[in-house]
Image 1 (cartoon, rainbow, N blue to C red):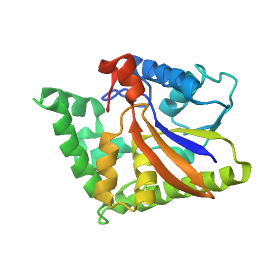
Image 2: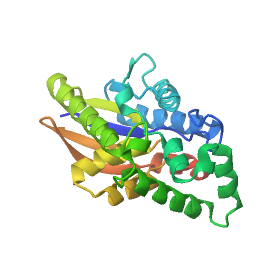
Image 3: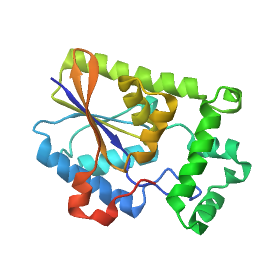
Amino acid sequence: MTTIYLVRHGQASFGAESYDKLSPNGELQARILGRFFQKILKDEPVVIAGSMQRHQQTAHLAMNECFPDTQVLTNNAWNEFNHQQVFAQYEPRFEQPELLKQEVAKEKSPRAYLAKIFEGAIERWTGGDYHHEYDESWPHFKNRVETAMQNLCDELAKTQPRYAVVFTSGGVISVAVGKILELSINRTFALNWSIANTSMTTLRLVGNQPQLLSLNEHHFIKEVQPDLLTWI
């Protein structure tokens, strides 16, 4: 029976001109994850990563700690939605990521403020009236992720490896879990906001259908360096 680990990338560069790059914290998170995999994975896994830089960096840093010769297969179906465009369409001045970072930094509760902006931006993106304004609409993103998940399950059901690890993003993981649990859009994106960097969401494959075993495991980060735990 195959176990699938959906891994969110390490901390990226929030507010930078290019978000799509791991921060020093993100690099360390990925290495800690890899050392944890070394303890729990008894066989070499099938490894897949989205094509974004943060996915690739996390995958290679983590696997170098446990199975350094493992091939990382790239599949852009596991890429995140364009969150910077989603923010910018909600509030045009946030087209410059550094302005969003500056505003968040001024708040007494930065995480709560960013959560409020995120909620509004996601509501606009998923609401149905503005799909034409986005490079990738919510229905297209949802269908892309659900198709990627089912294609993976179909392939793993044929080859039956013991483990598969997918390096991706919080939005992708939320949609995959939302599909399994039949969650509403609001509940799906409530999950997205809670998924920690380099956390693992674990699925068990029964036939060619995934069952949720665990969500957002990040205890291995807490055990090593609690202040390294991040969500942004």
